[in-house]
Length: 156
Image 1: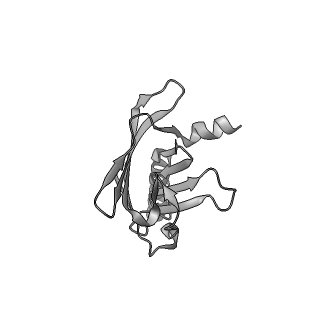
Image 2: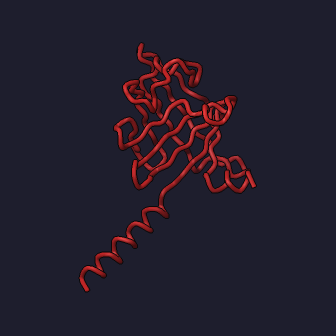
């Protein structure tokens, strides 16, 4: 009987954590950023891709809590560390936010769920810290994010 109660409690806790997971799809110029708060296997994920490239070659970099290259600093605040030793972020010659990936130290992404554009979109800010110590920042409104659920509805 105890095993059944523990199993039911574990399933209920998993269902609650999956329901709370937030997923964003963001765009800046030709860069698409997919942010996932939680996956069962890898924790939080940040996937950056180039929309100008054909399917199969779009992903430029992937950062995850599992390999230590992504920190979920708060519900909508992500910090990715570019570590070229990982194949997920090993395409150093690719450009992200006007800078080659191998010249970027960190990418900080902050989604502001309170700032909506009237069409279900939210504003986000991206700060790119380069290895030479300089940084660049997007202006408010340059990066537009929508929930993954809304993105799926718009594709239908």
